[in-house]
Image 1 (cartoon, rainbow, N blue to C red):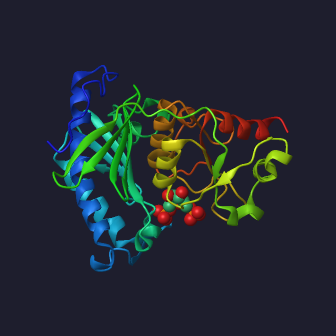
Image 2: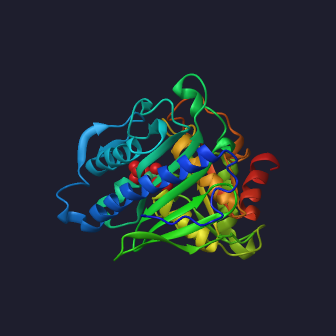
Length: 326
Ligand code: AFP
């Protein structure tokens, strides 16, 4: 078995059929992740997988060869699992696999792919829902709080899987020799506060006033209203920034900005923000769109973007205050 999930994993999933299906799907995603990890490790030896295909995905992002390859490997894996519908950043519409199956999956097959050629950690993000009655969209057009499982793989110095089914957050590491995912941390928890933020500061002139004020006060450090110095990190790969925040705390912001197409930020609600928000909340953190809980937001378009703020509850709360009180 490619992964031995913990005995307590998915205890929150009441229906035994859905619980069993989720575990089978996770094992399938692990199979695909081993393939993606191996090709990432080859870097430039993997003949141009970081090259642009010349195509764009449904949201206008340039598709890298590895984006498409990762999506194909995931589809192949999920066809062997009890999955009804598959929604993907790399697919315009919803793919129907086995409409009678109890679960449906949304994924960003390769998040951070603009970093492939720079040897920076990238990853696969996924969300598992119970298949809803009626049209395929019904399984995905719903608040993220209805997720059964949220998870993401990181292809970096280690290949890891960070996972929740609603009763805490687990970290598994791909053992390089046996190629099995082994449980390494049974319960990841975030500190309530850490003065370290992640944002792409190149967009400063495009931010809305509350974000300007908040980041300005972080930069003011001890001499400013926040009364402490802040450090900054920005990887440009959501899974890498999320993994760092889960390991030591901090705050991530990809806010709305004034650029064309960025009125709702850059990150997609269904297969990026929602699964990461589920994990962050289960680790004791917070996740909002700047003011509202991500997991309570409705979804009406597959590739819908959402402003995304997550991390330690103190800092996430400050961002909400700057949006609502100042
Ligand atoms: P790519 O998949 O196109 O590299 O985008 C990665 C991402 O969706 C997310 O992983 C990063 O946090 C964010 O975009 C970086 O966006 P900027 O390039 O605008 O900083």
